[in-house]
Length: 306
Image 1 (tube, one colour):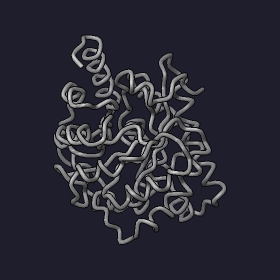
Image 2: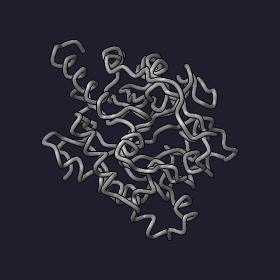
Image 3: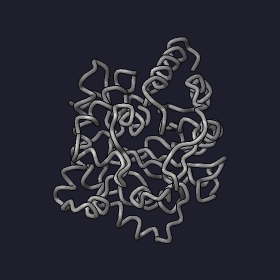
Image 4: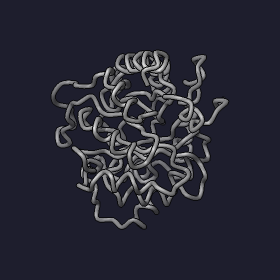
């Protein structure tokens, strides 16, 4: 069942808590994600694990569940021998699993269909570099069929997430234009620039004039970089979405994380003061930190500190 309010109305009234990293929760449940399809493999092999991971986040206080479609593409499934019609069904299943998990709690839960970058399909860390050598038109052609399949499944919003450069952001915004569904646009960054090196103010400004865009911001980045990015996004584009990684570093060659976590739920106080309205976590941020984030949001909003 859909929430009574659109997500944009909830953002106008206050702050909404996102979930955390899906892959780390699946690994905590004992799932093997060593495949190139990553968590998307489980859409076919063990969808109950995906639903259980989503449920862990709504129990922690998440109000938005991001689907397991980040790395789910027609091209990626085709390499595994999955026919196009079946692949479309798996994309739809990603939305259905999140919707079902959201119905397990009494509070409103919105479903955000993840539209990951082209580099996620390559499974070689390209999403942390961008500049794939493709034109904006070519990237738009890649993204459009998956977006069409996800929209048909009935999510509440599309998460155009982990976008490494402005070319791909432009392609995504073109691809969603025909569908009328709300979207958020979220870049992955280093410092005050996209992963491809563009200034964030210019990257955020790209969303101007697109009425579908309900929030702009960053994800899949160092928590320390998120602080300044929220300020820049708020000054440029209005409502802000922010969900950084734990602070650990991904080694694409070894396909593993290095370092320790620097994710602090208390950071949300500064994010909210700077204009963030959609807040959560990305890779390696589990239900525990999201529960802490939800408590901190409640303390700030109910205490009048926003």
